[in-house]
Length: 328
Image (cartoon, rainbow, N blue to C red):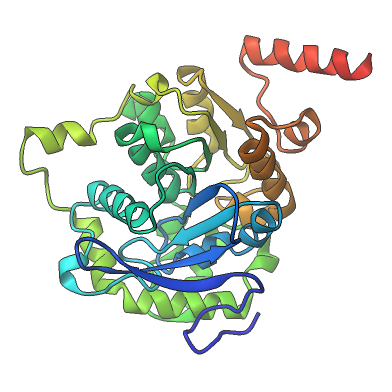
């Protein structure tokens, strides 16, 4: 998949597009599929991330199966507007407001919204603040799942994988070290991907740094907006959550502690998956997302393949019933 004149991977059936947001920002996104329900896929938060880098292996599959797929570049990433007035200085609030402006600009009133890592966390913030707009939410591996569920901070397991890999210093070698720390399927770390991500990361250095500094809440309302512990268990948006067993940057133990506190969400723990399950196990995650988005549930066969959790008594009971039905 060679880079094109934009500096993007050339992936058949995925198109690069721009749209002007209401605040004046020039937003970049990738799209696949022309008809069917809309699906928004939000990328993660490592330097060099983008809609194409995160979702290039899933977008064509969903498009071929009847969905219109949109993968925007969040501020600080990909080809998002680099002008200072559009930097994500308010962190999660900036990202959530951006997503609202993006879907409004495309006239998307109701849609499915999925995300990986910080993209999953952005999806959660969006769901909590705009629940009427999200049809369903398939999520992958956010390091914040424990905090969202209300797991005490002193119980959470910390990872040093990315810190040990070192920061992005502008070189393709440093990009490889970061991705190597979070990736299980090393074959995904091809040279063109590293080049594309490094180019984007160099463009977005200042914008991304502004998000990490994050302007403190200016008032009580903003401070309350950021408090989400315990709220996720109250939403009724159909949601599934996937967390790879070999995730080195967001330890799976935190997801397992969160699971009992989120009875409205079905958890999956696939094997041979790092932090980006959709690139470590593309065939598996493509099928999980397709079935959930299309049918509102994941089939027994696919659920077993993806490591469906059987830790909660009610889930184990349902799994046993499904097995008995299939056998009969």
